[in-house]
Every structure is written in structure tokens, then in C-alpha cells.
Length: 387
Ligand SMILES: NC(=O)c1ccc[n+]([C@@H]2O[C@H](COP(=O)([O-])OP(=O)(O)OC[C@H]3O[C@@H](n4cnc5c(N)ncnc54)[C@H](O)[C@@H]3O)[C@@H](O)[C@H]2O)c1
Image (cartoon, rainbow, N blue to C red; front, side, top):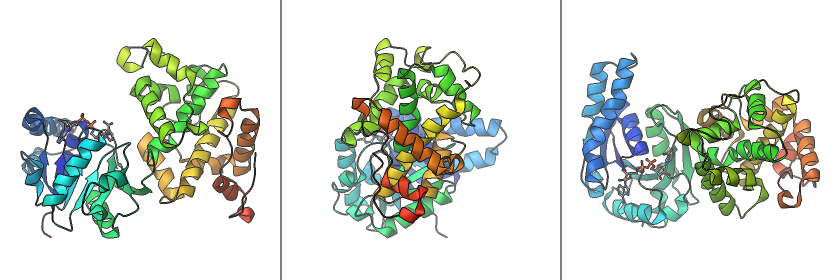
């Protein structure tokens, strides 16, 4: 088999990791960055990452050297013309990515794939910047790319099946688990994760403490509680992601921006990076007596979000569950959790929450038709009003 060449544009945190992933799997990698400093430092950065694997006994020195030898740093995007697939991981800016795609579209072979690692932009909008929108798709890697197994493969309405197949084949050959999804805001993980944080914040506003909410989730097998996760990523980053999704989803109350999060960001206690967060540096205590009730409530809202996404198309139940387990380290996916709890219990909890919801949250808990249908197969396809 001839060696395939994968191109990478943007050699920051994500681009370096993605370059390492493909080179380690045997592909030839050509990579570039607007910044000469980033280009100059790139190979040393990847070497340092590989050296840590060598030190841990997970890679031989010969494998490290062979991986590095497969990486060529080039000056301009035009130097990627020979690539079968180019993945961009540049700044999260539609104008910058669209300009780059227009340039790449002009030099790549007709069969080559143009992939974006965007977390929040519309892949379809990027495709519109090219003369060959069918070759454009999203390949959303997670940070750190060498360690995280999950890649979301994002199809916009006009992505060619052949482009999706090539991107999947190359990315799976690089050892990743590829989950298909549609070009919807937040794709799978960043979308379906919202209630994990949002419902914890709702509970906080009702008087529960971060320590007891996190302890309840840890007791149910989650590796980290919602507040420990917000503290890890940063309350400001969580706020930006929530606001971005709320905007993209028309301000639906499922993506409500809770005052507790706004106040936390205003306080400057953003999490690990500032030395104090919702919970950090404290540890969660023992689970409260009603821990099961907290878990049921959070898992009910996770299931409702997942079912809403399922209804929008382009994803499967199994795909959503796998993405949540690999992308967020959840012990079970949203549908698996709902089935373990029992769908009638999940639906009943949502209906109770909806009835008790204050005005700004009206509609937040209304069970999606899809979730209702999953809970009662006899009614599948029919509309059921659970208001
Ligand atoms: N960091 C994450 O956790 C994460 C996770 C998944 C996806 N993403 C997405 O991946 C992309 C990159 O994120 P990052 O965290 O690696 O960013 P980063 O800031 O670490 O790196 C971006 C790199 O792109 C370069 N660059 C900017 N404009 C360019 C251009 N026009 N042409 C060529 N190079 C250019 C910059 O010099 C920089 O080296 C973004 O779209 C981001 O949303 C990030």
C-alpha cells in the first residue's frame, strides 16, 4: 500500500497532537502554521511528547525516531498539495478558517478531503467558502489528541459519502474511535454535556452544595463530578461554551445560563487555574442521603438532551453513548444510564421538574418526543404531550 500523506494546518495544542497521532500510525505528515516560531518549535514539541511515552515504556526509541522522520514542516498551506486529507487546527475564527479552506481547495487534488477541527463553528459555513463543498467535513479531536480515543466525524448537508469514508478510514487507521454526527451546534459531546453542568448549577441555586452534588455523581461511578470538571476546564470557559450553545439553539431554556455560573466568573475564582473554584481545592465529601435522587435528576436531563439530538438526525444511540464515555470519561452513556434508571422513572422525573420549573426555565425539562417514544415503544412515532 502506498503511504498516505496527511496535512495539518495550525501547530498549537491540537495541531501538534493530531500530527503526532497520524505520524505515529505510519502516515506521512506535512504540517504548517502561520507563525514561524510555531513551525520552528513543532518537531521539538512532538519529540518531547514522544519522549514521555518512551520514558513510560510505551514506545521504543526506534519508533519515536521513525515517527519524527515521517513529519515534514512546510512553510505555506500551498505546500500541502500532495495530501490526501488536510486537517486544519488554526484559530477558532470563521473568517480565518474560510480563507484557509479557499486556499487549500485551490491546490488539493479533487479527491482530497478538507477537514476542520472546529469545536463550535458550522462545518457547512466553512464548506461554503470552497468550490468543492462535498470534500469538506469536520474531524473533531479531543484534547490531548494523542491520548483521547474519540473523534467526532461531522457531515454537513452536502458532504460526499466518499469524503466521509476516506476521513473515517484514515482516522481509524490512526487508532481512533470515529463517531459520525451531523453539523449541529456542539456536535455530540459538547452538546450532550451541557445538562451535566447545567443541572448541577440548578441544584446549587436550589441550595445544594458543590461538594454534595459532586459526591453523589462520584458515588454513581462518574470519575469527576460536574463542579470538579468546571474547575478543571475553567468557569469562564464553561460559561463561554454554554453561552455559545444557548445562542446557537435560539436561547432554549435547556441551555440556560445560570446566575451561579455568572457570579462564579465575576468572583474571579475560575477553578484550578486561579487556585480556587466551585469546589477546588476542596474535595467532595461523602454522598448525601438523597444522592440517588441527584443522580436521577442529572441523568434524566442528560437523557433528554441526548434524545433531542438523536431526533435531529445523523447520530445513533450507540454513537452518542460511546462519545460520552470516550469524550467525558462517563461510566455509561446517556441512553445506557436512562435504561439503567428505567425510562418511566426518567420521564416521570422530567415531568415533575417541568411542573415545578420557575418561569425562566419553563420548557427546560419537557421530555422530547423521542425520549417518550423510547420509554413507550407502543407510542413510537406519535406525539405525546407531557406538559
Ligand atoms: N484546545 C482544545 O481543547 C480544543 C479541542 C478540540 C478542538 N479545538 C479546536 O482546535 C483548533 C485549534 O485549537 P488549539 O487549542 O490548538 O489553538 P492554539 O491557539 O493552541 O493553536 C492555533 C495555532 O494556529 C495558528 N494559526 C492561527 N491562524 C492561522 C492561519 N490562518 N494559518 C495557519 N496557522 C494559523 C496559530 O499560530 C497557532 O499556532 C480550534 O479550532 C479549536 O476550537 C480545540
